[in-house]
Length: 437
Image (cartoon, rainbow, N blue to C red; front, side, top):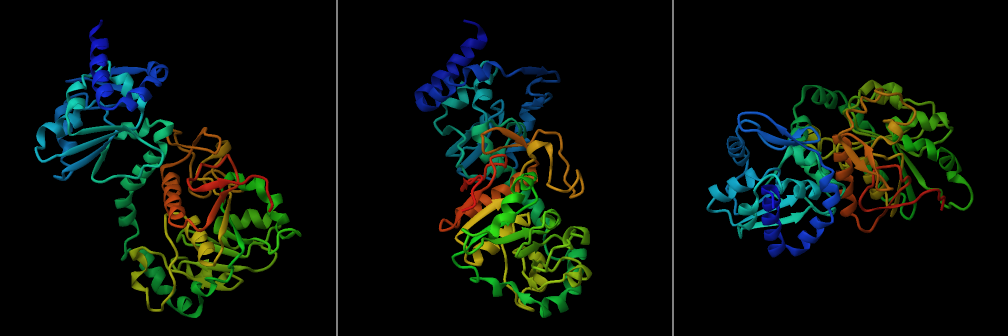
């Protein structure tokens, strides 16, 4: 037996003795593991790379482990998302006498199996404090944790939902910094809009007003174009009452061009411009807005306006003076639009053009590439669509989807539906394609 085969066999023997179900899962990955191309990356110490991504420092793996470990608190339980070459797991087990449990979550089972023939893992795998498991689709992020960047990028399909939750958690400090109170532009917008906030209606006036109705929430994803005929038929006999149509701001132009009239528009982004919001609709509709939009843009809105605050600290400067209800924030205008539908009393919410990905290599319906500040990117980031196929997306889109999934999980009394299998799969939604009832 070669040295590599012996190393692999020793590790698998430990796994089989401690986690027999995991060993069976790994055995199913033999063909996928064999197809992974590992490359040696030269350096003072050298390392391995998969798909061009280094799995550790090529100069000083021990020093890298110390730096990574320093980001983790002195806790009795720690979580590693992706073992990579095992150096951090080994370092933590050796250097932390107070560590009682180290949970290592495999983000790519085939990659882990492939690496077992190249790195000696039997020592840290045998440590009784270690728990090894494959990442599951329903897993939430456990704290405190370290997520190996290369492992996130190389996550397999089964670990993709957890990967997206990890990325969302890793982005959270940046999001909080970006949307904290006291930002000059947002603060000036809020101050400028105080007269409008006071004069306009409170979004709370809409709450409960659509009890028993179905809501259709319209985004601007590419799949919207496949639903325009169905949206035109919304008021036909058989749909009584007609579904409540709530459109996000950038969907107003494509809807107007198709002769479709929304009931309510929702806009929360301070970067929204007249070309997005002031679409030539057949008749004015209500606008639910966050008071960080430009005052001149709000005054130009031809229909009734309802003010809503967000949950972030940005709104603390005006919250309560005057009092206005709060809608859920999650990074995208989709979140308050969906929350509005639920708060209005709808117990069935259907999503149309809510893709969180780039089906067909496009970012949005109607709008050209880059017009809504979204680029296709390198393609390294992907989501699973309704067919289980990988479709390109962006990390921020994945974070928006994760937050919507969490919202859906908190509302088990509401039925949520997706309208296209080409959209990124949203946990908690059923797929409803080509139906009008």
